[in-house]
Image (tube, rainbow, N blue to C red):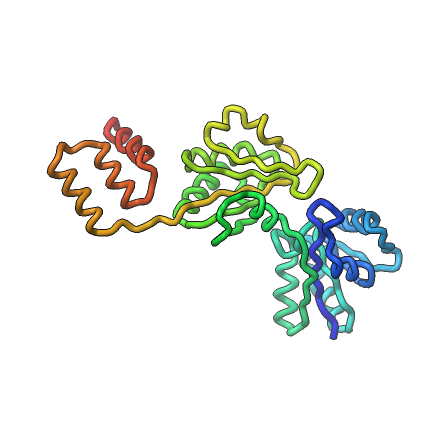
Length: 276
C-alpha cells in the first residue's frame, strides 16, 4: 500500500538528520519540497544523489498540485513531502494534502526529527507544561497588542515565530502589554550563530546589542496560572478597606487579587482614570 510520507528535516545543522529520515531520502523516488533548490542543497550536503528522483515544489500556493499527488498515491507510488526545515506540518504547507489523504482513506506516515518549537522550549528555561504554539503572529502592531493581551488570560508557556525585520517591534509591543514579564528570544537554533536572549523590560534600552535582527526566531514567554481568591480572603480585604481610611493603593490591591494582575499596573491605571 502506498503512503504519503512526511519527512522532518534538520532545522539548521544537517547532522541532526535522523537515521530513518536519511534512509527515506536515499530510497524515495517521488518528492515534493517547499523549495526544490533548498532541498537539493541538503541532499548534496548529505551526499545523496537526486538525478534519478522526481522532485517538484509544493508550498502555500500549490494546492492545485494536490490532485497530482493523490493520483500518484492511488497508483501505488510512495510520495515524500518535505519543507525547507523542520516538520512540513508546522507553519508549512502539508495540512491541505494531509486532510485530503485522510478524506480518501490513504495511508500517512511520518519520519520525525528535530523541530524548532521543542528545541526552543528546551533552551528557554520556562515551564514546559502546558505550552501553546501560535506559528507566525500578526504583522500589525495593533493586532499584536490584542494578541498579547489575549494570551495574558491563558496560563502556560507561549511560543511563536517572528521575522527578523519585525522582531524589535514585537519585543517592544510585548513589554507594553506585559511590563513585568520575561521574554525569551531564540535565534538561529542549531546553527553556527545560535543564541538565546532572556529579556526584561529594562533591556529595551540596549536591545540591538542583545538581539541581532538577522536569522530565524522562536520567541517564548510564560503566563502564570491565575489563582482564584478565596471568599474569606477577599472579604477580609474589602472589610479592611471599608473600615480603614479608603485609598487608591488599597483598592488596587483588591483588584490585583481578583484579576490576578500586577498591583502597580492597576494602581497606575486607577491614578490615570482619576486625572481624566
